[in-house]
Length: 277
Image 1: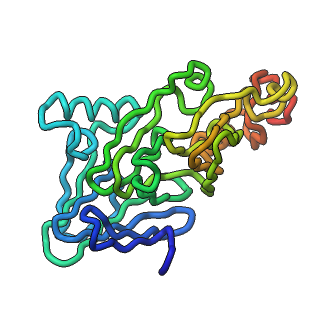
Image 2 (image 1 turned 90 degrees about the horizontal axis):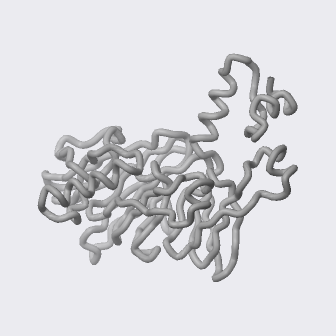
């Protein structure tokens, strides 16, 4: 299927290329096809199924092989994953047989699996802490620090985000429906802080006040928006898992009923005014 972003067939001229296909709608999984000797790396516990000729090996760190051969190099790679809330280990799947073999990985939340080739985006992608699902072996999974104090405190993702480096395919998971915006130099976009799923390293990520005092208290959108300034690409998710989890907790709370609001700085009084209690 030509120009289908959810399906890709390898190019014979690219040694580390892989074939893949994204299947499903709201609960998607990615099916990766490996040639002999090719490998894919994935989050621990993400596998759905694999062909018998695909060998599964658990490794310390991100499995990219880029941290050096010593113990300290591997420890550093694993430590980077730990501070982003991920497991110390990843799983490498290698096709050791002949012909073609397949392995499939699923997203843990309702939403979309987005296939991105890092070479098309400057070799680096910054994304939310739990975005990484799988990749071609060789992609490095590190950390990106928010250097601005206000952005780290109120940007929705804290001071630490995931940084994906390399030139191969990577598969990131995002909640709900995902849209991509390409921002021109100096162009700005205001986004709910929890809905920023990923952006290229050329994007400037900052926060801006959501409006006046009344909007901050009663608007239900929080005190700050994420302000993204181009040039670069931005991926926005319509349903961050934190929002879904918050709604589920509110609906099953001790007061019963449905919590229709996003929350308020007034706490319980705000819930009373908003009709949530």
